[in-house]
Every structure is written in C-alpha cells, then in structure tokens.
Length: 240
Length: 148
Image 1 (cartoon, rainbow over the protein chains, first blue to last red):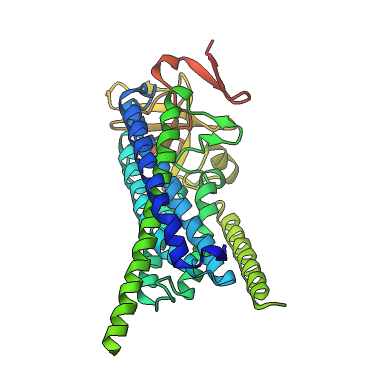
Image 2: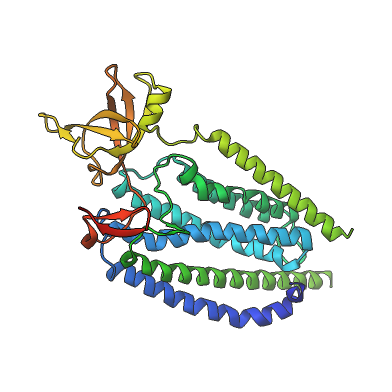
C-alpha cells in the first residue's frame, strides 16, 4: 500500500480512475432509478410507495459503508502511518453524512404512508440518527484539530472514527435484537424476500450509487491534496 | 518488536475491548430498547392497567370488528404464543388490516382489553407485485407459493 503513498503516483492512477467510476456509476444509477420508477410493478400492499426503496437502500448502505471506510482508513493511519489514509478519512466524511441524511429523509417519507408516522424512536431509526450525528462530530473534529502532513485528519479524529464503528453492527442488528417498527432484513444470506420483479433495479442503483460514491471520494481526495499544495506554496511565498 | 507491530496490537486490543463493551451494552439493553411489547411479554411479565405502553403483533384474521358507532374497532393482537384483545377509536393507517403487523400505543383497561390511542401499521420484509397477491411466502424455501 505504501507504493501509493507518493501523492504524484496516486494522482496519476486516480485521475483516469475517477472518470471510469463516475460515468458508469451515473448511467447505472439513472437506468436503475428510471426502471424503478416506470418499469417495475407496484407492491401489493404499499403500492407505488415501494419505489423509494431504490434510493433508500443504497443510501443506507453508503452511509454505513462510508463509516466502514473511515474506520479502515483510521486503522491504516494509526497503525501503518499511511499518509493518504488520513486524507481518505477526511474525503469520505461529507458524502457519508450526505447519504445517511438521504437515508433518514427517504425513510421518513416512506414511513408516513406505510406506518402512519414520520418518525418513531425505534432501534433502527435511532441508531441511524446516531450515525448521522457521528458524521457531524467527525467533520467538526477534523476541522477543529490540526491537519496532518498533506491535509489529512488528525490522529484524534482517526481514533474517533475507529470508536464510532461500534455503531455499525448495532445498526445492522437493531431489527433483530430488539422489537422494532422497522421491518427485519429482506435480503439475507439465505435469499431475498423481495420478489425478483421488484428487486432487480435495486442492483443497478446499489452499484451505481457505490461507484458514484467512490468517484466523489477520489475527487475530494484530489481536491484536499491540491488545497494542501496551494497552502504550502503560500506559506513559502509568505516566508519570502 | 517494531513500533508498527506495537501499534497494530494496541489497535486490535482496543477494538476488541470496544466491541465487547458494545455487545455487553446491547445485550443489557435488550428489553429496555424494545420498541413494543408482544402479547406474550404481557402474559409472562404482566403489565398493570393504565400504564402507557406499545403493543405489537399481528392482527388475528377474522377478529376485526367495527362497532355500531362506525369509528371504533375491536381486534385481537397475537405473536403466535398469546392473544390480547384491543380496541381503537379513530382513523386507521392504510396498511392496517387483518393478518398484518400492527403497533398500538395505549394502555390496558381493568378488563384486560388494550385501549389504543394510536395505531401504526408495521410492514414486514416481504415485497411483491400485485399479481402475486394471494400467494404466500414460504419461510423454508424463500419462494412464493399459491395460497390455498
């Protein structure tokens, strides 16, 4: 991994990779969302409300996947002192928080007609809201503490990212451990209880959003490295 | 031992301790974090009349009856182990129906009937098109089969 620690080499690989992630991601997302809106049949019970699934599920996955990325980056930063891991942590936080918010909002919009309430303090919803607050805390901490070498987050922020990962299994198991208003998992290792006629566009949006997320993270990493370069040059100029 | 390995061991030990603490907290929360009581909890633990709780379960098929005033309904809630009578006055959610999940907010009266002040429909994890309505999801095979 340290082969990519050199920002110049990293940028050389990442520049074309961003486009390769972004455009296929956008196309898959649009195809999946279009099919989810116009092609698949309505659910027998929920009717057309079911279509929010194609946004809600990828948003939940990326909210949690984003924090998994933060935790992995934190581990690499703290143990192996990888200089780009600290940059990756900072880059992931904002899109992760965004998708967590999308998950909460779409869930709320779905909950009103389905359950008859916008919000209830059940295990799944509460733990997901905690994840959103963790993101806000991470972003605040990253901005408040000193920057690492090339614009990465501080070690204390990385530790926070690692500790926050404890919430991920809680979110995942919240509907199994506790009675909750949110339904149990539909897609498990043993199969899917979502009928195939409704399921397939979810694959498109899931992969599409994930590729797009990766592209956004790489773009943000490039932006952070560029910003850092500017600041270094300004400092040199100021010193004369 | 290299500093890198020391940091790795420290990180792994810290993570293991954290996960252990999280699991302990979650298992201690087990009952407190439950969003609702199921009828069997009510039977085994006993909930005194007048205490505000949420009751969750399935609406028993054939138990839903509308009173003569037109807005009050009576129904039974079950979790497969126990059955509790409930009544509610007001507009029910669209997805509230027999054989479907419900979470009712309210309290038991002295006669042991749950007087609900609010009803929430609980959706399950099954999604299917309308054409498949009348078919049943088989828990064993994870396939749809015709409902006889």
